[in-house]
Length: 320
Image (cartoon, rainbow, N blue to C red):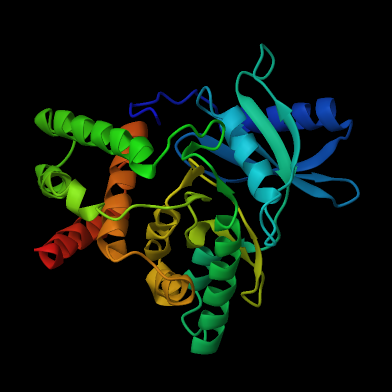
């Protein structure tokens, strides 16, 4: 089961990371970096673009938490082999030591920028282009979903006979931790009240059996879809907690970060179908995932969390 606990990030300053990136590529690739640029990061990862004399560019990612390296690299390689849409190819892996105190790995660079950043400043994307984009994204994701396992669970070791054997203990652990954090005023009572109502109806929400253990990306929203200047897809990046799972677990992210503007989830369902309770399941998956991310990092993103709470409330009313 995914561990539901606060993780303390390993300290890493950007200027030191630049030095570490240069050192790692020299050591592993026998090349000298002429330019290293910070690309971005989250609670536990920092990515740097590295350029060589021949204009070749790669990305070096530092992982600021222990026990992330094996899983992240494994999932990238698995998805790279399972999709017609490009995923970053892992070039080398380097574990922490006395000279570089954080794990890191290198991958080739996906050209372009995130679809979220691109669409944020382009308010005049035509309906035709939006639909073409949605069609290509959903086709690519469904292709990933066609890769299945006999068991549900983590990609490293799927070992559950059904989906809820894997998911329900995780969801229960998130619920328990959320209640604990609410008592200490670390998490809003409004959030936990909605969670408690949804948790009380878990067996109804998840009454339909999931028949296939499908490979999922785990975090495919607009921020992790790269596009070129013409808004054509150039690749997918940054899987998170990939698993052999209910394929609908991949759909709640389609509604985050302007995803509704492109009707990504609606397009996927129109093309490939969905369970009767897909809407409320996605509401549950989305809220639980965001609370889990808050538990893990201590960073609450209100513009993501608030719509998820609102949607969970709405879907619970429909259930009644």
